[in-house]
Figure 1: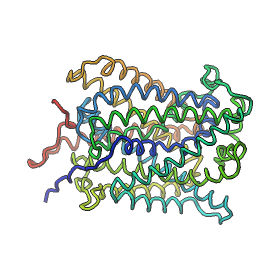
Figure 2: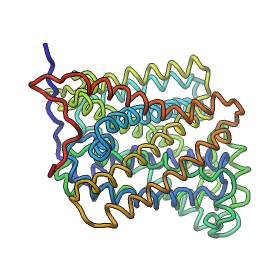
Figure 3: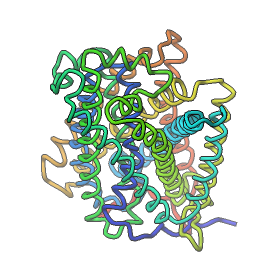
Figure 4: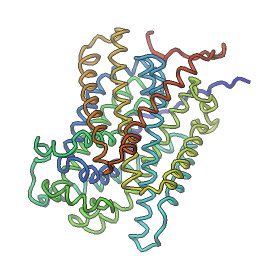
Length: 480
């Protein structure tokens, strides 16, 4: 019997709720507390400028993205945009790239969460527990929340987000008030500091902090007024994230001194406690302890958001019959993509098992390597989406504003291409390994996911679709 796709998701999310989902996926406290990894391994005191430049590139991208959004009616986000602009084969390939990217980042964050919870228990005098135990527990709780309705997840994310932003603000104000280690300066944004070390790799890692960006379009079916909500949420998210990360990491650099921060970050790389030590020095043990707790909740909020994103990707792919259509099912009571949510949870557990078999360290290997692989995937997705905006408006002429449809998308395309190339060619600096195989796998995995998606597209689109539910040639486009 031929299965039919489930109904579209519905909801009443406004701009604030969607921004919460986006920023929670970006995980402000997680990014700030993980930023010493980038400081240690890339361009040191220039890391704040990385976030600023990444934000500028994404603002340029957002111009074309929001101009095209009203004309793409499917909630598949980037894959729908790529399908509408570059054709259904490219769109399907982009969908599989997105699935790989977000699953990679999610599993990396699960490992960081397990590491953080284990460390928190030890810090407060508890027993030494394995990180994977808490990772599995987090997967179970996230599975429950993902099975329920999206509004419940939004409420949880909103509360956790407010708390983690507050502690970063408290630390930043304290550093500013005390004048840092050697006074307040803007050396982080000077060319000599910014360009030190593998710059492209540093900017690529900064892009990981914007990884929830696409959520603004993914939740369009659940938005109260998509035509207004999506553009407002998109600009609010990218500007808010960019300013916040730039200021927070800049003040972290000043807390130790621009010239000294990289060596200090290297000393704390294995323990991952540079930010809490900074809080201890500038504010007191209460803030350091609070941060140790909130990093766990920040990571938890992050995996909830990524779980929701991946589940909705599978739901949308199921509706378009690019994966088994049963994954498009929605829960009769919670109106959630429950079937897709369950699969995401199973895959998360399987990947955690893989990292255990490989014996990788949860912070310096799983989180650092796999999240960076995901960041390369994000940049590749943005590249495809930028190209699709240009192609879409060149073909349809639905919007004749040159800045929105040509100039800004082209500038973002160039910026993304430069960052992506320099990041991939400097992968060995991140892994601290001369193994060509390891570096090639980490850098090439997103491309492999894209190629697998293209192969699936070729197979699926050759297969006759049922007369009752024809396979769309591309994502639904208004005015086409």
